[in-house]
Image (cartoon, rainbow, N blue to C red; front, side):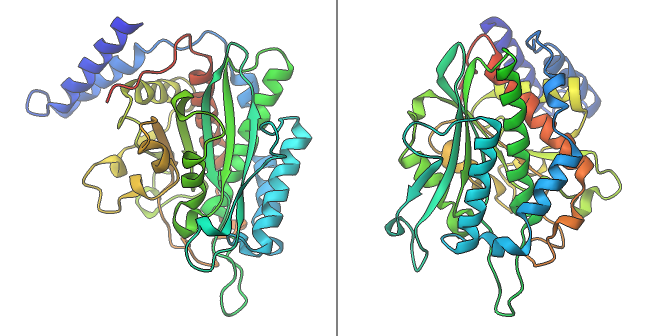
Length: 347
């Protein structure tokens, strides 16, 4: 395992030497590295297939509608959204971390300005073999509230899509556990508040972790995965991958190998570049894990014409893509959770 991993790193280093190889040669080398990643033998497709367009559409219409009043941090709509998430985990039988009743409360004093007290929503699926090793799946569930014209920012893509994706992924893992093939490592499903106000919920968690950060294997963060940006209108079978190789080449290779085996997306690394002027690597909740030296992947569909507008509504979501992207994240989490060895931090 270890020898193979460093061989894979060698392949990646070669890929970076553009002066030595043509683009075609680089692609061949990358494919060799990915195809050599050994995946676990258990086939998770039975559980991935429980993630369906029908369920994602049903829950997203419930979560991203006017009754949630835009889910603004600390306001009544955000509390309703938190209760919705809690009820879902109770219904599928995934418990809360001990003593929390699904809420990690964040005091008003933690926020700046006039933001009211709020809460992260947390559910915990204990691993069977390595329960002290934790994979954190995260998505923010807050949004922008209501504007001065009483129009609601429903935030269907931002980030109803990521929030509902996480629920379906959680339900798939819960089904596997009930059938005796639960994950070897534990999974914390972390719905964070205050992202739109400045990544508050994820910062609060990493400063007040429910489980030691040294035991956190990685963070897979899901923020906006239900739409297609302008750049991909003619080729929508894509997802942006950000940060996967910043701290762990093994995490990067696993995500690519899983995609090659199961979902066959065009994994777009445009926004993973250090020179990215948008600085997306620093703009969502994964960053509070990354700055604590925890490997991360940020799954993202890019911005679109409805970004941060009242027109970001459930009717505009591409549910086929949302389903397929959710499956990629599930497969990646499954692989990391069930590998013999914890993934390596090497940067």
